[in-house]
Picture 1 (tube, rainbow, N blue to C red):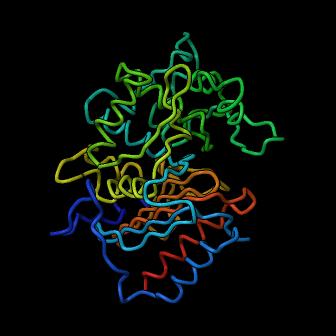
Picture 2 (picture 1 turned 135 degrees about the vertical axis):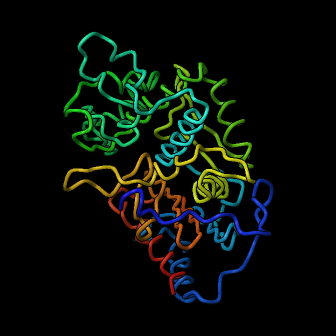
Length: 348
């Protein structure tokens, strides 16, 4: 699917208030498969962990800008935060977009990475565009199994935890930039530091930027982003939010970066996120720019995280679906299949 083939992003329906305060609430539509939908929710929210999904903490479904379904496990509710894991990557994409709109960043220029500044360093060819598309060519291994050699575990909890961007940027090239797609959390922390350097802010000052330019305008009151000791937002993995606030963020992208009539993300930025990146044969799944593609049918795009954290945008249905939970690694594809089935209930 090329950019010219992307399905249109629907505007907020007239008369439906933006959820900057409370969500407007509605009912499930009559023209959907309610029996199948109920079975899927029962399977996810059973008393004991599901053998297919593990634990589901919360699910929020927004259609036409209206909250039509939310459901929580015992001990969870609308205000309790859930882990983002790699959904934070898509939040990082939004922060870069804001800085692009401010004229502070050019994603097609060489990335501002001090570790690559030596004369003749081949990594100088890496742009922010290639980083956002996971096509840098850096030799970074993404693996969350504790007994396997893993660069991401070392970055988040080991030798790289105090300066995640420096750790990730220190890897050599394994492939020519742009010639190989490889999903890597280290990539995002390099991007996050590039954002901080462009803004001239880190730590609490960068957190203030996140609140003032992204979270507060959307009415997101629960986000808890985590920073490393160097003051870099760990944009690869850590921005805890309530499911409702994840849905607000998803609605921003469904509405093409516009909120209450004001453009928060530059024109074309959401299309950039959902335009497919070239990937070699056998790549994990279709990818755009820090967003995954196609989870809930053609034209859908999603922020996906470890253990089954998903915020899925479905433009043709004017819908956002959020699922947060804790799914064992060996079942990692099952929450995606479950969400796809939930969305299919609305395609009758």
